[in-house]
Length: 266
Image: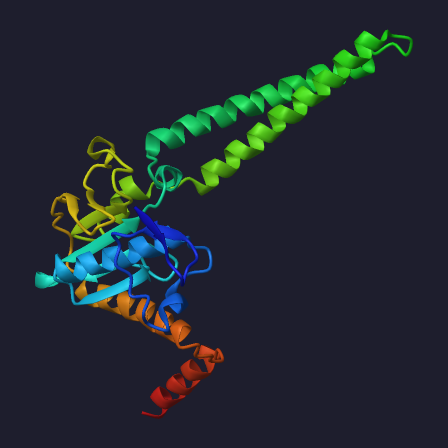
């Protein structure tokens, strides 16, 4: 069963409890998020608070540093255990991050084959163009035009494959990303993913905030202060956005110069 959430205008499952009574509710929603994705983020937050007993939680947290990948929802629980939840509202969204090095190798092989094919078709086309008889039949001209289209198709496929390689996400299987937290979970609409399709070392939550598959504990290096700072930055950003706080950026070099001057006087 679904219902229309008035704040988002998007159909979301009635089983998801949203804090939409708050006047600032919509202000936490990213512009590119669907109603389903936003609802699942709140379901993840609720699970972290009620089940995992996390008391420090944030949306869109960069655990890998200022330029690292973003984790959808992160919580710090008892024993300073870090919980990381990725929100996936569709199969396509899930597949984007469910790649590994084997996928990358296959794409590289495909890219190399397309480069060779493009070079070959270009040479054949160039030779055919040079040797084309001006008085050649209409059929010959059409064949040449088809060859030009073939060259264009292969070149477009080559460009597309290279772009996919550049943007390929191996997040679910990347050892660096798996070292960011003690527990990794996916949260998806009910029955969107089979338990057999789960990436290794990930658990599964459904839209009702129920644990479908427990995530295994990973004994990662304790980086509590780093996680707290990352969540604090995310929450500060979201609070300022929700309250529509506008600030001017200040050149930090001025502070560094003052600090260096103060140190020189000591």
